[in-house]
Amino acid sequence: MKIGKYNSKQQAVSTYLVPTPSKEHVSFAHCIITTERYIIVWDCSVHFQTDALFYGGSFFKNTKHSLKFGVIPKDATSRDDVIWIDSNESGAIVHPLHAWEEVEEEFEDGNLISSRTVIKVWSPFSKDLELDLNKANTFHMVEYTIDLQSKSVTREVIDDTINSEFSVMPPRAKLASSFVAAPSSSALSEIKVDSTTKKYSTLSYEDRFGFTAILGDEGHFIGYAKWDLVHRCLDSTVYYGKDEIGGEPTVLRAADNMIYIGCYTYDEKESQSSFIIYDAKTNEKVCRLEMPHRVPYGFHGQFISREDLEMHFEYHENRPSSKLKEENEEEMYRRLVQQMMTMLTFP
Image 1 (tube, rainbow, N blue to C red):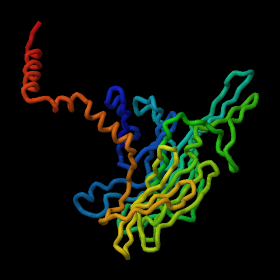
Image 2 (cartoon, rainbow, N blue to C red):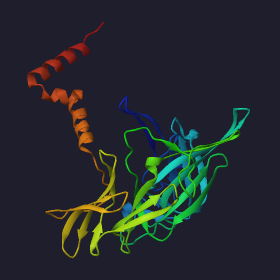
Image 3 (cartoon, rainbow, N blue to C red):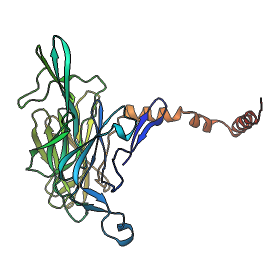
Image 4 (tube, rainbow, N blue to C red):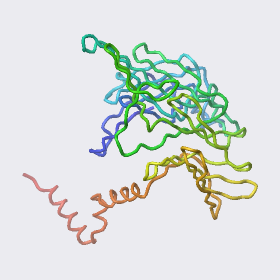
């Protein structure tokens, strides 16, 4: 496991470290998740089995190794800066949904005397994950509370009625996020401040809802689930047609700030691929686009707006390397000779 921090101004990885405390095993860590100040990684119960390269079988094995969370400050420069906290139970997470910080500050005579931060992580959790294409695993949505002060982890099951994985959050709006108070069991509330205590959360209004794919008995995606991170519950579910299986839901934010869910589906009875768009607020179907050919429904898709796509091409077309390609061969040769002469010039 390795963590790198990319510097967009330098267009290079400015920090590169190995967060794990030992090299005794290689854990299955598919992705990371971040909060305002931290990067969260994990060392789960599923480890790589390298001898399968030679003897066959699965590349992964499930062990009794306990699930551990590594909390990395975003300004970390070495392994020594990583805080590892043991959950004291075996299990695995693959695609976490969201994470945020909740802070409680104590004041005396207007001066800050103590501050306690806990990190909330929502993620589908599997007690006995087996990465085998012939087996369907079971995942239930849970909330982890990581206490940095006591270095403890607690897990609470949010819902165990559906099997869902492949989490996705709506992309952020191009506006500053508004902060809300620590989520309650009833509704969003304002920041709570009294003479001695202040509590707040980095969970924003636009991050209230998240989505996961619902897994059928055979491991296919048969719909999607909508989660309410503020009310801490399963908000609703949407299922595809009777004979349809689909891909991982893709969440997009339109120009008018509306959120939509898009997914490819395949009707096995009719041999018909479609792309379906749902209104994320109401779960109502907006449209169904029938594809002229079969489209693999797959997973890990991402919607890119026209504006972002144009910016992508504009960026690459304006890079020096791209401009150089547009010049004629004579000019390129002249520049090359000039550079070589400069390198051979001695003071």
